[in-house]
Every structure is written in structure tokens, then in C-alpha cells.
Length: 310
Image 1: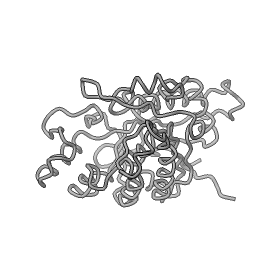
Image 2: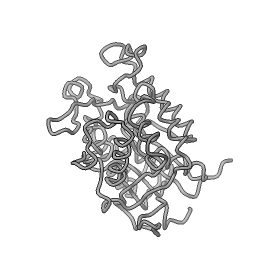
Image 3: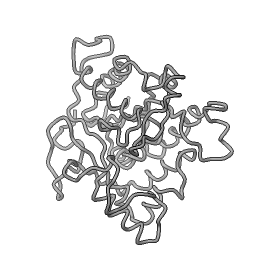
Image 4: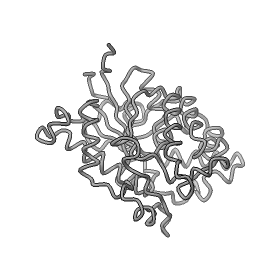
């Protein structure tokens, strides 16, 4: 019988590939250290762009089979990271990708046609119902740490925002003994983090890309100008996990998503030109719980800092 890891991390993301982009190296590091890692993905990403020409027939306006294909991609990505506990919220197909459009102000918004056409679009989800699916996972896994998006979902995607709402509400409900006793014994998550990207790190990375002659990756981003809200001031960062030793696993996970990510795209360009620190150092903002001991830069260097195994 396999023993339960003493430290357990739960991540809640909106679509396949979000987890590998945001915290893939941290996930691989914790798996390698014997810590428990559970990923819950809220949709199958049915409305994603398809970058493989021979697979364009999977698009929503044709065969509408992209979600099933991306379920296979995320399985391959989890294998690359070593993660063995991955679930779709409520089961595959319960919630559908809400689509995305761009607001005039430059941030993502939902696609009104998708949201109107598909009642199970994640943006339409009943918050309590969706949270209850996650409560069942929380009470089963009993994680000490939860990672999800900030209140804006990083860049405004409605499914990211909804994932944030579901995760934060589920964490509260899971801790209430009187709520849905049928879903298991109450469990309070000790620490909750929102994924973050340091503004300083991205500016340094952009400068090095431009110095190397790359003017197309992250096009429109000026290392000395205004940046999108997904990049956070260093004063908002409270933790940075150094998982550079596991960068290869993260890159392999990203390669597992050929319909969404190309190996000559910005993620690989940044990694190739800047080095492991570009994607192997992953930042977080602590929003619940007490910060543990900090590292040399004044940030926690372990999301489980201050938490004894249980």
C-alpha cells in the first residue's frame, strides 16, 4: 500500500497547458522530492487555437473534438512532470472552455457567442456547484497548500477568473464541518498562493531577448515600458521556488502541447536566450496562511515553508 506524502500540493487551473506554463517546474521538483502533487483542470480547453495544420478539423466550428485531444496532451504533460494525480473538475466535459476575445484595453474577456451557445461554458457555472466538486477533492487529498490564479486570472481570461473564484470558495467550504458532510471530513488548507510572474524577472528577460536580436517573441512588450497586469511588482511576490534543476521536465511538458505551443514560440525563445532562470524560477504571492522562513532574497523558497509534514 502506498503511503500518503507528508506534504501535499493542490493546483487549480483553467485549461490544459496553463499548469505547465505557470508552475511546471515546481510541480516536477515536488514530485521528485516525494511530495504529493494534485492538479485539477477546470475545462478541456475546447476553444483553444490550433497550431497544427493537420488537426484544424478538431476546432469547435468543425468536429469540435479539441477538448478530447487536449485531454491526451495533458496526460503526456503530466507524465513529463511525473504527476500521477490529475483530474478534470467534475469529470472531463463537465465544464467547457468559455472562449476568449480581446478587450480594447488589451486584456482578455470571454467570447459572448460561446458563453451564450454553451450552457456548460465554465463562465456560466454555478459557483457553489463547481466549488463542491473541488471540495470533494480537497477533503480527499487534504492538501496543505493550494495554488491558483489571482483575482484577475493573470490576464483577464474568464476561465482563469472563474477558476480563482471556484478555488477560493471551495477552500472555505471544505473547511466548514457543516458543509456537505457527504463530501468527506472537513479540511482547512494552511496556505494559499496565487501564481505570479516577477516584473523584474520579465523585464530582465525581455532585455536579454532584445539584445540577442529577438524582436518578435513577446511582441509589443517593452522591457522599459508598461507591462500587462499578469506581471507583478516584486513587492507583491512572497515566494520563489528554484526548480531550475527540473527545467527540462517543464520544457518537455510544454512540448506535450503541440496544438497550443510551438517550440519556436516565445516560451522556448525566452528559455533558450535567457537560461534556466527564465522558467525555472517560479514566483507566488501568499494570500492565506503564515509565511515560513525566507531565503536570501527575502522570499520563501518553499511553498511548504513552516508546515510540518502530516
